[in-house]
Image (cartoon, rainbow, N blue to C red):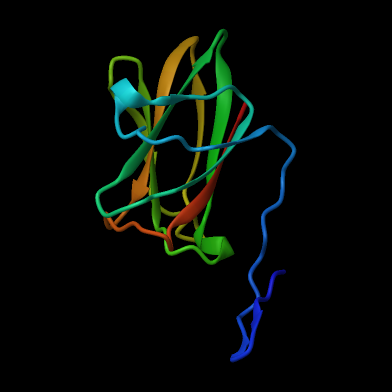
Length: 142
């Protein structure tokens, strides 16, 4: 837990995400659509932010064989203002699956078995909000 101490008092404690079991990269703007999608490798952790209203972050990955992928957002559970919405697309731009909220949080999670090919992950705020209070950690793993 992290608490910031200032002359006017202490902040509320926040969980601090450090490292992880997989390589960590930062989201790289501009990654606002399929043509600008940031390529990632599986497994991957992406630390990013929905920078502004109506912003989306798009990531692409490829699998060689049929693979079950798990894609999960950690945001609201760690104090972020992001109400995530995840969409998985195939290489033709067709929606494979979508998740807005998990059972106990507004963070999103997808589990999907996909055949060999290229895929796109679209991450955005469900209400099209963004800004400095909308950071996230996206974990993508086989």
